[in-house]
Image 1: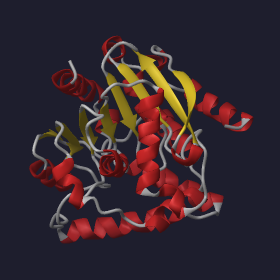
Image 2 (image 1 turned 90 degrees about the horizontal axis):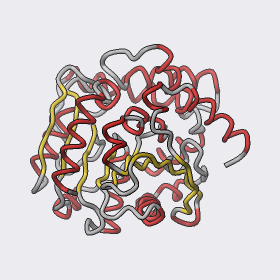
Image 3 (image 1 turned 90 degrees about the vertical axis):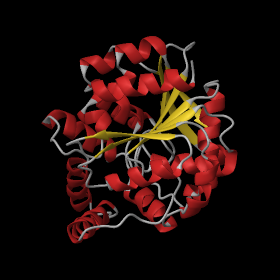
Image 4 (image 1 turned 120 degrees about the horizontal axis):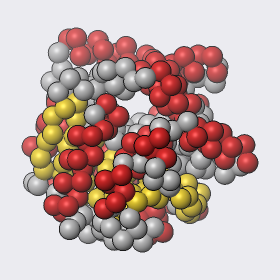
Length: 305
């Protein structure tokens, strides 16, 4: 990571809430698939059961500041979060093949090994669900204790039926996403700001929202283009392999990933439960962190004593 990138991430991190600073993380660089350098943050009790947080599209490990900085989680669990390749302070390869399922799987395996996280619980948000199923496809489930899917963008069966209104919202959302691929910075920033606003049903405080916009902008347009060029990755054939316990946490007012997708996915997995966040959008861990952290802790204790 360059000096300027380190400085930028330090400034963003310095804006974090007091609660987040309470469990100051330590950082390391891990060689991911193909030697791609990945930034990894660790906090909490290094002797406790490990939890590996996997952020979504255009995000950062900073997405999880309300978890990394939670005193109860930090007391009992080894908290690990990474910047995925192309995001945050991690290296940013340029080609679509750099964002293959093999690459995602290799990155997660490398982080698990480097942090000596024995059978972690994975916590993937949104696109992180795709990363998690890439790991399952190439590495299996023997090395993980369970998965808490959070509004995960992963199709494990036929697409859920959508109303006409949902289809129109989807078209509008896709149109805005195209702006995030633009090299025109003014257009890109405006689209990214819209995207961040769409992540929650209830608006976050303005300083928090601007901080999220700031770390979203550390994913450059060419990375976003490369990931889009890969197209969707179909993991429907992997559903039967997901035999470890799974918890689906999803807001029923999500305008990014349909709530019904988690309903359907939870039904398809052999050992899964669903937690409905009524009146909450795409990021329940941001909108209701107290409940999210409490349910996550209970889930981890149930699968990884």
